[in-house]
Length: 345
Image 1 (cartoon, rainbow, N blue to C red):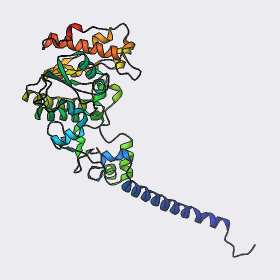
Image 2: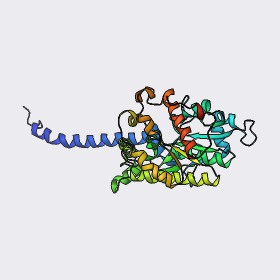
Image 3: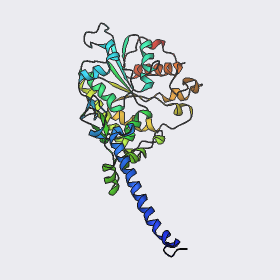
Image 4: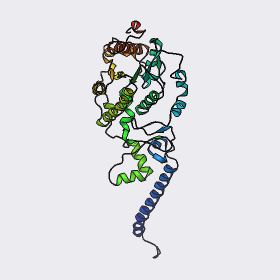
């Protein structure tokens, strides 16, 4: 061989450094491209955590009672125009029956659920409900606005189940922010030290943090809601229900909280720690509490009270309404006209 040829060992000695440098440069370019892409085209699941940079827009403003409310009565009416129309105007409506106003999740609001059964079964009351699912703070903001703008219900009914607490369990009240575009966003709880700086300044790091479920209350565990409530979640529920109690007292409207049992509690023996924790707090705040667990759990065909999606079927809703009417009769109100016809399926 020619003496000028580079020996094989020399070739091998130069390659690792070139490879390492090339790898670092390639990684840097890829990271820069990914960072730029996430800033220009943030994924949908990141939108609620971008504050003023979020593309979300809305109709909300901050509120001292519930952290969020609508920017105006008109904005609320526009957002709920179809559902509100049958009840307006509040003061001179031709239907002069006393109003029962229902607020809750799909167990109350969905077609064929509790509000519709009350509408069909309680003939001497006008049943008010908006037919929409909202997170608890928005739900309570709706009640406040309605009371301030002329709704005069004989009674408010507010449903509360473990599923209603998932949103504020994951994102506590102190993380809620309304940006200048009226959108509900959330501040991110960052890790301490350099990691916190990275999450604050890098979209890549923020995306990883959010998708790992670390952006809100990392101690919250939805699977334990039947057993117990996280201390922060319990504090937030007290805050919300204290604000609602204050507004209800201002308008002299009694409130019944419906602690509706869930499918797994009725049919699978899941504990009632959720209800057992909240009922004393709610009574302390002045609420009437309706907890119909006993009649559901002792029913001879508990499975037969539910639809496949774990909502109550007609039999379950009839049982729920019958127990509610009996509760109101025993506790506070004269019997509604349908009370004598209420039958436990």
